[in-house]
Image 1 (cartoon, rainbow, N blue to C red):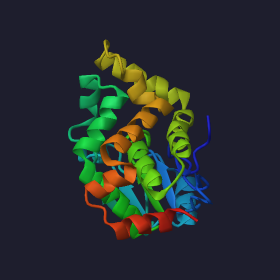
Image 2: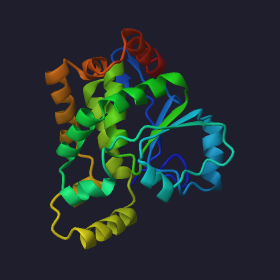
Image 3: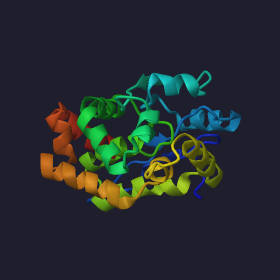
Image 4: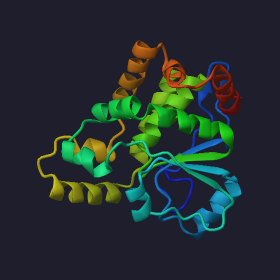
Amino acid sequence: MTTSLVSGATNFRDVGGLPAGAGRTREGVLYRSGNLVAVDDAGVHTLRRLGIRRVIDLRDETEVAHAPSRLDDLPVDVRHEPLFLGSVASFFTQDLSLEALYAAIVDDSADRVVAVVRGILGAQPVLVHCTVGKDRTGVTVAIALAAAGVEREAVIADYARTEGMLPAERNAAVLRAIRTLHPDAVHAEALATRSPAPVMRALLDRLDREHGSPLGYLRAHGLTEDEAARLREVLIE
């Protein structure tokens, strides 16, 4: 398992260093993670050192109330852009596949995905996070990176990396809890613990087919040409 950059936060990492044509993504600009409820003193110190100016929280009100972020007195602008229409629990109840879940995000929350991209443009360094940093964060960060010009396989690899960031004991505990509530669920393990490259590749291919590209998807839902240019300027060196 790869170690999280911030102590107490699951799956906290910098997306810097990814290839983008002749350039690469800037380090120290865009971070991604799971929730911040268990951040310890050392983790708060790291957040302060990283200079995070904005946190974009993709969780719904129930999740935020259940697991509030520990940010202490850090001078950060916190923005909430919940990406699910309905609770997280409902997706386990419906036994959705990852493919269906990601389709729901891009179809039902397109305005929020664009709002996240605008949030990235508005202040850096910026952290985008949800509960685990896998699905909502994975989809939005992948779309932002692809739209900025990051090479497709690097975008997919960044998404797939999450699976190796999740502690085995966490996965086991979460799966036990889900199995108790939904003993016959087919997709529970994938929803809770997996980030398979083919799933993200299929999502990005779908955006290509329907909108010409992930950037075309953002443009179709309101991102301007100036904002698209600014996204590349902010993320790519």
